Every structure is written in C-alpha cells, then in structure tokens.
Length: 283
Length: 330
Image 1 (cartoon, chains in turn yellow, blue):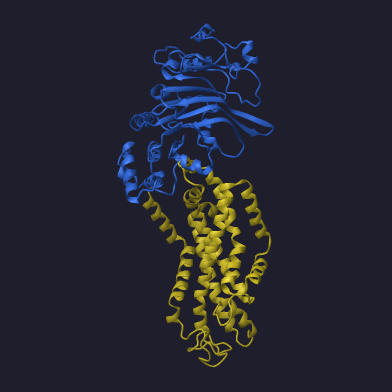
Image 2 (tube, helix red, strand yellow; image 1 turned 120 degrees about the horizontal axis):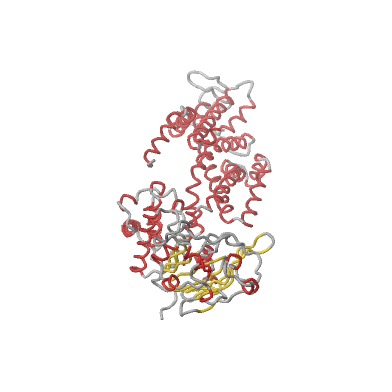
C-alpha cells in the first residue's frame, strides 16, 4: 500500500470513529474559546463590581457573579487559556524528560539503564500529588512552578514505554546500518529510533494530557498553583467552595468547563488509540 | 608490492558465556589490498560474521573478549576511541548487511536516507539529493529519480540492497564489508548485485571483504579466499589456486559438495556432522572429528599454519599427497 492510500485510510478510520470525532469537536470548541476569549468575554476577568455581588445566573450574567461582583462567565472563558497553556507546557516538559530518559536507558543499557530506571521507579512509587506538593513547596507557589512539579512527577509514565520500545528498536538491522555508517549515538537515538517511537507517543500524550490538567488544577485548588486574581478553574473552584451554599454557580461552572475539556482530551485519546493501535482494541 | 589496506593479525574473539568462554574466532590472520575482493567462506556459525563485525566494532554487548590486531592502513583500530571509530565507520569502511529488508530506516524515504548520508560530509541538501539520485543510477536502480521518493517498504529486496550499496558508496569508503550481501535475494538479483560490487572494485579501487557461505559466489567474484571452520581459517590463498589445488581436507570436501554440471551421480556429497562449539581450547585440530583422514596426531596436537606458496596457507598436518582428491578413495 502506498503512503497516500494509507493516509486516506487513516483519515477514513478517524471519521468513522465516534469517540475521536466527539473529542475533536469538544477540543475544537475549547480552542476557539481560548483563541477568541477577549471577544467572547463580556468583561475583563479582573473587572470588579460589574454588577451586584452573588448575582445568580441571568440574561446579563450568564454564569452569575462572584463575591467581588466579577462576571463568572468572563472568568471561565479567560481560564480556558490557562488550562490549554498548562496542557501544552506540561506535555512538552513531560515528553522531553520522559523521552530523553527512556531513549538513553534503552539505548545505552547497562549501568546507565539501571541508574535511570531506578529513578523512574522511584518517582512511580511516591504518590504523585504528594511529590508534586513537595516540589512546589521547594520551588515556590505559582502556576509555572506547579506545572514543572507535575512534569517532574509524571515524566516516568513516558520513560518506561519509550525505554522498552528503544530496546527492541536498538537491535533492528537499520540501527546497525546507521552505526556502520558512522552515525553518532545521539543521531542514532534521535533520528533512527525516536521517529519509530512517535506513533505510540501520540496516543500516550493524548491519554496523559487530562491527568496533567487535573493534577495542575488540584495544586491550584490547594492554593499552591495559580494565585488570585488569576481566572484559573482550580482556583475558582476552591474559592467557590467557601460560598457553595449561597452561590453554587461559582464552583459549578468552572467545574463543568474542566470536565468538558478533560472529557474532550480523553475521548480524543481513546479514539486515537483505537485508530492507531488495532491490537489494543481487540483486547 | 602494494600496501595492505586491512590486515588482521592473530585475531581471536571469545564470548563470555555461563561458566567459561566460547571461542568464536581463533588466531585469524588475513591481508587485504586495495582493489581486491577477499571472500571469507564457511558454514553457519564458523565465525565469519563475527570477524566482519569485530572490524567495525559492531559486536553487541560487552561480553566479547578480543585479542590480536586489526590494522587498517597500519593503525590498530582496536586502540581507537568510540569517537574515532565513528569517523572510520562509513567514511573509511562501509558495511552492507545480510538482510536488506530491515536494514533501512522505515520512516524516511530512501532518497532522504542516502542524501542524509552524503550530508554527513557537509554537502548542501539539494546537491546531496542530486548525488543520491546519481548513485541510484550507478547501482542500476530503475526509475532512480522516482524511487528516491519511496519508502523502504515500497521497494523489493533487490532494490533495497541497491539502496544499501548506494548509501555505502555515497561516502566512497576504501573498504566495503559485505556480510552475506545476497543471501536474502534470488539468483537473478544476486548476479546483478555481484556485478555492481565487481564494478565498484574496478572504478573506485575499493577493497571488498565479502562474507559468504556460497562457493559459487566466491568463484564468480573473489580474488582471494579464506575458508573458515569453527573459528579458524583453515586455508587461504589465491582463488584460482584454492579451486585448483585445495589442500585442507575441509576445503576439498566442500568442493566435492558443490553441485556440478558434469557429475552424473544422483546425490550431492555432504560432510557429516556440524560445526562444533569450541568451549575449551583443548589441543587438537578443530576439524578432526569430522575429517575422514584424521589420525591420532590430529586429535592430540594443534596443527600450525603451513605456508604452501607465497599466498597459499593451510592449517593441516597432512601433506597434500596424503589426501586423495576424490573421496571414494578414502
């Protein structure tokens, strides 16, 4: 089968896959909201007293107003950007760390592998949130630091499968050809082995993005991530808890937005897995 | 006399295994000159690929113990650092492998792979692509320009081996190691690939070390030949001399096992038994247990290499006239 035919077939499989399409639509809407958040929001997310405090959802204030008289709808919309930024930066950091360590372990083997695999196992056996809390405490509060903390905790989930794949690819004849050809170890790892790992990475990324978003939100919820007046959904949730009886809309809407986005990533990931890896579907 | 390009001096390779060493290669010496095709022939497991891989330092794992010298233009490659070896591989010594089916990176087009190879020598991308296509034409690739945009899985085995050769040619190495280059291919393609290799020797003055189990291939292409058995070179020399006057019983038996047009008998000659795994270096000839002419001496003492003529060497106790040239006499 030639390349074009294969691409066409993959595209058809995508269109036929319900989960993938729904996930894609959800994420497309989230992305659009993030891009046009200034046009969509009615007020600036820090603007206070745009209306009465604790106003329930109405025609003017779709999601109601909060304790400082800010428009919750505008704040949820503005929070979209933060969430996507977290997903992007978190995934990048995790990937760079996890893939590099996985490649090095699998390629060099021996004591290098033993040392790094030990590190990987170590991060696995400490509960993620606790470790992230420790790291944030060390780095200081803030959104960027909490993303870094989450990445430092969850890179191991990439390192292991990449290591396993590298070990099997390393013994493939084309890697030997590359060696016989005078390619450096660096080039063998990143130009010969890595491109052959990418298909499985795509699925891994879309599956682990929701976890990264949720973990970062957790840190914000605990007060270690984004700080006021950021429109971060996690922060909004934790503030909303204080007024949960009086004004439930303060926590409901950011929560729904969070569930919606995470659901989108999850559906997309599952769909991708079915499309790219028919073996797992059969199980 | 010409300078040697590659010379192996008393090369021995032992693999560390559970409870001792496995002697994969023992006391192998050979000299290779520029513009010469040197064939190493032997059964599976006789150590011929191990020799080839050790030259490039491609033996996997750290459990191989190597002794002796691998001199390339007078420099011992064994003293080179890994960094220096990277400069030798591809640039000075190229290697093509047995199985062209998975010797190419599946994610890049073949043109891309060959031009990347050329770009290792700091050549512009477009120029490199042009040269890659020219190389594809050199190795007689049909529709060279179009094939360059194909992925490896879209090409046949013969075409992939052509790509491999083009890739190795791209950097114009002085020595090409061909590890069973045609084993996975059918006879028609085999003949074509062999033509390309012979042409290469003439036009580029490249020395070729050909590893094979195919005597026909040797007779067709090689200038010199070394016959290996159980890790040792039992006989080596000029290809005509070896074919005319084989000295070692193993070589003789191999010759008799070749299918010939003139022979009328129904079944091919075979040699009973198989290559032994040499675990402990006891004295004695390694071929003794399969040799129809073995004497008590052969089993208790190790034969030395005898110089028969300027190039012809043989590792056997028996004088040539003691071994009948036809097996039926034995």
